[in-house]
Amino acid sequence: MLSSGLPSAAREFRRQATEEPPVHIPTDLPECILRPWRPSDRADLIRHANNRKVWRNLTHMFPHPYTEADAEHWIRIANEEGRSLHLAIEFKGAAAGGVGAIAGEGIAAATADFGYWLGEPFWGQGIATAAASALVGRLMREQRFSRLQAPVFAWNPASMRVLEKVGFVREGVLRSSVTKDGALINSVMYAYTAA
View 1: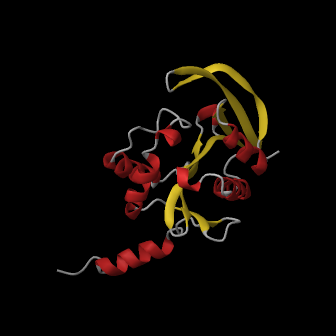
View 2 (view 1 turned 30 degrees about the vertical axis):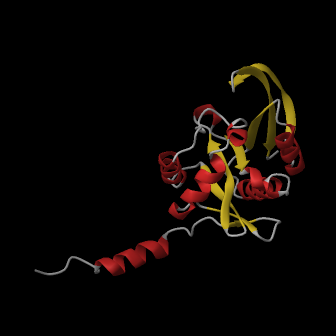
View 3 (view 1 turned 45 degrees about the vertical axis):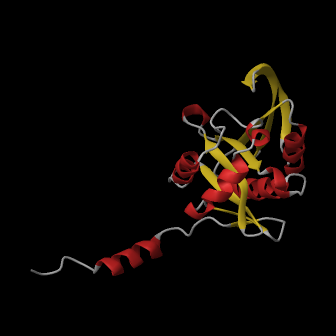
């Protein structure tokens, strides 16, 4: 019987050569890059995400406690193809947190929900600002979205400062709009627009 094509190793090489390279985005900090999540990040992800102080500032989609099963699930879905982008923030060779943009749908297709988080040992070092700035720059250069929006819990002024440094504008306070950690609180809407 005749072979119907290239040997499997050659087909795999050709497939890899035609795919886009993985996203690797440098930041203003020399030891900080944005890159896809890897299975080898699981231990770092669990260590930094399984922290009540981190969880307290994130949406209901971020579990607490953060388990090995949660890490495996996240790494799988973070690497699914689509318009949304979920990247690891790597600092000094290890995953320190995450940054991303979740694509809107339908009439909100030009909008993405923008967010980031860092493990507590990395707070206050300019890493979140560097990561957010790098991803915003990339998304705007690619014209992937016209608007990035980021609601922030009212009790999180540090995150508001990060967004303001990156060029987000405070659009308003959404009074009594979110329930987190047993409290009904305000959120503050920030946005970055291409125009």
